[in-house]
Image 1 (cartoon, one colour):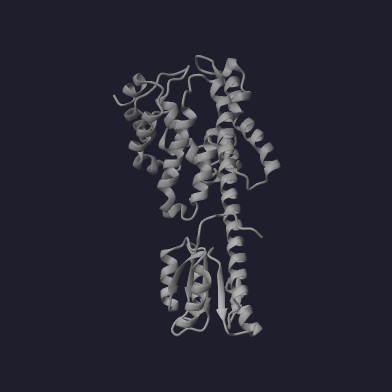
Image 2 (image 1 turned 45 degrees about the horizontal axis):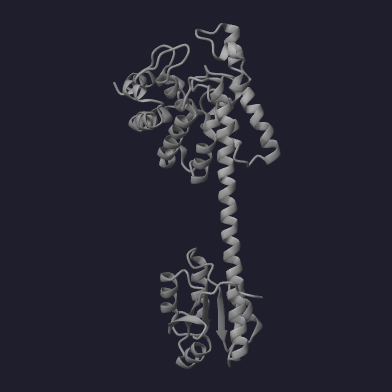
Length: 370
């Protein structure tokens, strides 16, 4: 086994016996940086203040806090759990060794010390830590690359729908951040206690851009029609929800139900459902509608109202807030989850901030705030 790093490693020696400390220090100080603690409490204090320690040599029998307790506390703290611990002890009973290993110790060195064995075991454990650290770094890099690939794939696919409807502009980006703002705001809401953990919020944020992916399957003469749709045309338009869901579901079958696309499928098929049951494609009512779809419904309607469409002019922010919270005949408060409606009311200035940030040009920004 060959350690690659040229740097000196830092080793903490924890022992209440000055002679043991002196022996270990003499053996190791030429090749390593040494820190010393003469009690379990002091050793724990130094380790917590220096979580980048490379190794701890820990005596078991000490007054006050013994080595077992020090090790237990080190391994229960995420900041110090990865520091390898070698117990230094005169005890050779297998039960003592088993207890230490169960607590997370990496190795044992028995007294009286054999210089060759001390150096070999210290060296081997330092090399193992170096390899673990390098592997952890590699895994973190690969994970980051995978997340970036996911993000790029989602945005690329979502952009397909956006190119079909050239007046939507940054719609997918704005709605993504509206959803994120609402999810974070609802994190501590007792109605949805425990639902909005950090992973759920992250996946909602990533999945929101795919809400209209099904529009890829809608004919141009319907999608881009500069006027009201006929009943038959609207029936076809509504299928973008099921088309989107089905395409995403095909990917989910390959990746598994726990894939990052789970929320994307929910959002695609349910973001036009309404709390009062008057939405589509299934006429779901209340909590029958997935929570992800309820969030997306609010984000989507706000952005649709502030945006120019082939069939309507844009509305300013204040008018849109009034339409959503008071209704205008086509849109009524009863269309929305009451908790999410209140969240929108609480976050209306945040919605405006996001809209302004991702508007296409200054004219649109000026119109939005008039």
